[in-house]
View 1: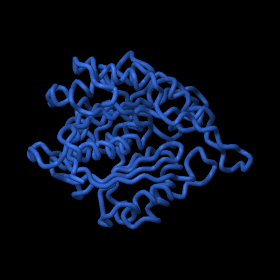
View 2: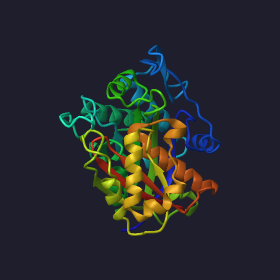
View 3: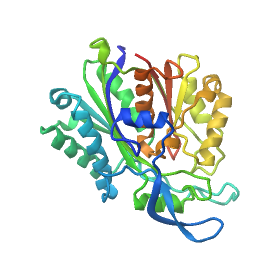
View 4: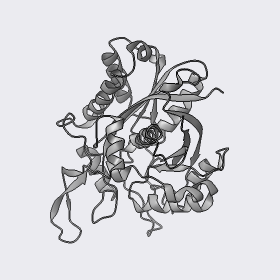
Length: 355
């Protein structure tokens, strides 16, 4: 199969409205966290205090729910349109990763053997969100996009699945745009995360963020000066001990996915670990199980420390940071490894090579 290459990346985060600004700020250690209009009780004083999060400033203010997802996507699309021709985008396949619905009940208590696991939510993103994303793309392009050219994926591994599909299409000579948008700073999402005990309260837990991204993927071989990076191998697996399973995190899924990679050389990991103890435990166990992860652990980058947990967009944020690092020459290794973990056990990895 011919190599697929990345020729443009548009990225919107709390650090900036394009990939260059976000990556430069993250590299400089800049953090633009702020208080959100959502209150939780302080662990020590029991007094209500606002949650801290990484919201996109300015242009997303006043948008909530599905409207906020679309607004974030619109910002990234506008950046994409400044750098990629309308003709290219109108003929492209659009592969969109959207948030998977959160489980409706909290994670089981591991200290209580009688605590039952929650029922699984729907597998894919809500149909209405897919339809509205399709409409947004058509509106920004000013032309209809065939339904067959718009596919949706769900969850944190959605971007990895979308990139794998893009690679197959690119081998046939097609151009693809892989996109994603997610927000964890929305009040309804915050309420669910709080009810599930996942928000950072007292220094433990995730700090919510939001992001959107679009990356152009093409068949390798043309216009080498435009190539930001090359897509390598990807793999998927399942973690039986996921957060909502009622089982301890043993890192089996991530290790199984990493074990499928043909190269065993050390890499530069970019993980979607988000500060939750369960995820940190899983990452540590996975590194013990797999040589590639173990020999690369000391160089791992965690984008959530800079932009918060960006949900389904996490992998795309890592991809954007890796491509900018390649372009600017500060990537610690010539191969980056994206790692993604869905709430209900899906696990994925994907290698990205410098041009």
